[in-house]
Image (cartoon, rainbow, N blue to C red):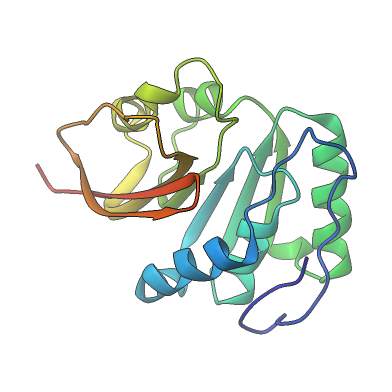
Length: 181
């Protein structure tokens, strides 16, 4: 897997060799970053369920100010550290072995972009929009991007409005924007 755009374009990202992590494919990753391109520069990007860290690293390569990487898998955390070091993004990266839902409830920080690619069979995936909204984790006009199985219907919130949804084979990408309401 390689970085698709920006200052680190073409650089290699290492992934785990087992089936514990399902990295976002190049086609979907490129499509997501094309859709959110105006929002990337100087943003604070949260890569939840980070796996290899490809999405957060891609954001840094394209001009994000910093990326926060979260995962509960120790092997994923080690892989993210290796990738961030290999591409020399250590100073712009914060890597935490922590549950995403716990993190957003406990953390007072706000993010410009949250990318969440949870396990497709995860309990509570239907309520991810509501949980992010309740935690008040996004800045105004911030984006929540969820990669999920196309059969999963996400529960809608009041302050996070679905602005774009696109299907890629068995994967759906849903993009929500935080409104001022």
